[in-house]
Image 1 (tube, rainbow, N blue to C red):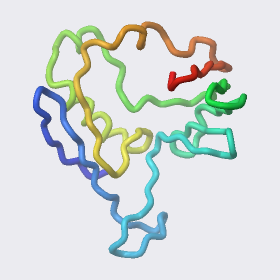
Image 2: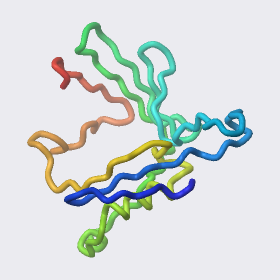
Image 3: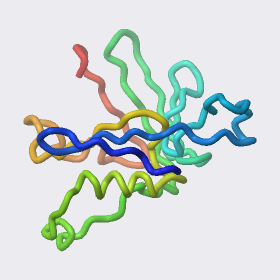
Amino acid sequence: MNRATREPLPGGGLVLTVPDAAPHAETGAPPGQSPSVLPALRFERTTGRRWTLLQGERPLIRARSEGDGCCRDLHLHRLPGHRSPLPPLSAAMMRAGGDWTHRYARWLEDAQGYGPLHHGRWRLSPRTTFAPGIWSCDLVSDWPDATLEMLCGGG
């Protein structure tokens, strides 16, 4: 991947502008046109209410929604083989500090074969707190099969 352009944001953080990929035979894009390059880590709709989280060509999670209206349940099945686009963080790394947004930007750029970045603009901002109730525990703890109950009203 070409390195993204980094634009600092006031108050911290940055915007990554990921360039178009160079046209190549796999995409079939003619010279001068941007190819349709998918990110390695992506969701794809397989049929009506079924989704798959892919990393490259490897399926990681298969999901399906059930029910009617806005309050559907989301059934998930996790498959083996996930490779994190970010390295594990040690306590020593956290204590060392530094410019985390630039570190994460570099890690995401370097994870081109298995990360989520694709053409476009990405905002990376430091986060020191979350609204109450967000990320107070793991969202899913019953793997490999789990169900998320979706709440009405955009929950």
